[in-house]
Image 1 (tube, rainbow over the protein chains, first blue to last red):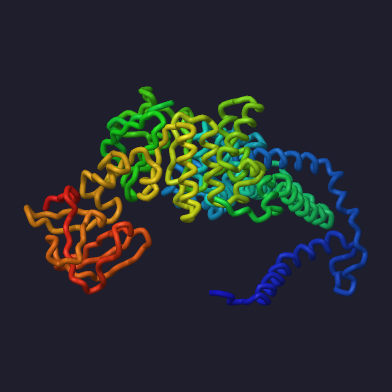
Image 2 (image 1 turned 30 degrees about the vertical axis):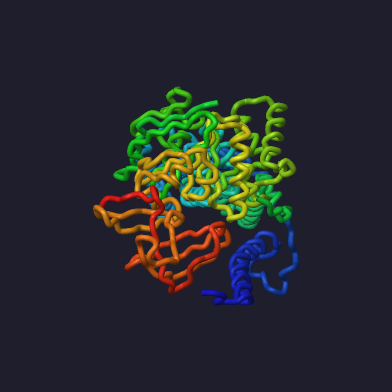
Amino acid sequence: MKRVIGRSGTKVVILVSSIFFALPLLAMMRFAFQNMGVFDLRWSNVFEKWTFGIVTQPFHDQYFTESLYLSGKIAIGTAALTLGMLIPTAIWVHLRVPKARVLVEFLTVLPYVIPAIALVAGIVVIKPHARWFLNSDLSLIPFYTVLALPFTYRAIDSGLRALDLRTLVDASRNLGAGWIRTMTRVIIPNIRSAVVSATFLTVAVALGEFTIANVLLKPTFPPFINEYRMREPRSGYALAVLSLLFTVLVFVFLSIALRSPSTKSRQTSTKSREMP
Amino acid sequence: MTSITFNGIRKTFGTTVALESLDLELQPGELVTLLGPSGCGKTTALRIAAGFEVADAGVVSLSHRDITRTPAHQRNMGMVFQSYSLFPNLTVAQNVEFGLRNRKIEKVKRLTRVGEMLELVQLDDLGKRYPHQLSGGQQQRVALARALAVQPDVLLLDEPLSALDAKVRSTLRDEIRRIQTELHITTLFVTHDQEEALAISDRIGVMSNGQLEQLGTPEDIYLRPTSPFVARFIGSINELPNANGGGQILVRPEDLRISSDEDELEMRGTTTRVTFQGPVTIISVRVDVVDLLVNVHAASGSILTHVGDRVSLAVAPGRGIVEAA
């Protein structure tokens, strides 16, 4: 399998996939920011009449702030619930029931296989018995936690796999640390990048989920974008581009801010002295 | 100074018996090694002492205080692990400080202690480095400093040298012994390396199938093994058919006498190989269908035999142990 496609082949693959991802986004940006009718868009006028003022238009909509605020709250709640539940569970599985890892992996992938609309159908069935809970907008948090599981569990799991978890936990407990201190001082700092990825993936799911919010009539950001886009197509898409950029920036910020000191030193490390 | 006692410790994992019934007492300041092949139960015994496993039956006590059910983090044990166990997110100094912080020791005292410990393992200039910037030997030294920083009642060493290369291993082995003697700390050392065990221990417990086969000084274990298993496990051994009463006689290569006079001693054979190793020469002699090894020390004179020579052999008086058929 060595060098089947070669170095130039790799470049071609990267180029083609970049085009595949970038082209629809660029098309969306043209539609949103180029001030001309769709039928007039040509290669010849690709650099003409770009205006970015349109992006501020949705800000004046009364539901913009409200929906964004609600989505923000749900995202934070989902991330907190996910991390609070998932990290101890994954550690427990790794340490106590390593044989069950395959089963847990299978269970966590189910939300990816089962369509969101099926989940909604389930929610509708239990709604009469849990109206007190489902009436709250924040009731989306547990559903989003489940929806994000296929991504978040994998992120945390691979972080833990990269560690010699058993030895680190034993060492920490041997040095007098209880479970909470072992988690906060030893395990979590060492799976920092996995935690960042899981947080980002959770936030991305919570900020982008449309089906459940729409069917349950929760006024979150995605239903707002959808509704707004129907009213104002161009600025609606401008908003979509903006939220995409915002998400990328959040990820970059999280990655830099939560970088561990040992990672920083790794980049500047000099070769260690060899001595016993 | 603390003693640690295992009394009738039994541990099973599913249907596997890891420890049958272990009775062992470490005197204050003593270094005892549990030696045995993989799966003999030595590491299980250590993990039970540390509190990572709970015994199914029996009592572990620390200076006669029962700690069988005390959680790991409430026992005052220092442990060095086989694999590198330093916390990768903390610097060397922070690693050493970790146990002291857990014990809520004030900062000034903590830092002083960290300095002392790093000096003890001769790494006082590396406090600010991260574990990945250290060699394997350095990492194990830091792990030792970290374990000792909390002034543990007992030091537990779980094959701490096995991941290191031979040269570093022997240097660090001597260093562990020096520090252990200096601090006079009761130490339980687990290894499968007999040379390591012989070099470092006050007493050695040889284990097999969850049982302590023999407990004694390194000299006892090597020179006066009480069971065929111990005799075979430690050092090289020749197995001779026992002429009187069946079974076999197990005898070490240095306990066989050799003579170039074919008629002088009781067994006759032909030299098949002569390997000069400096202080000793190993001579391989075929007697009937059995190949026997004989160690001849350089001090005992020049080598008397060459490949193809007829020689005679005898077991030195009082040596060798009889294994019943």
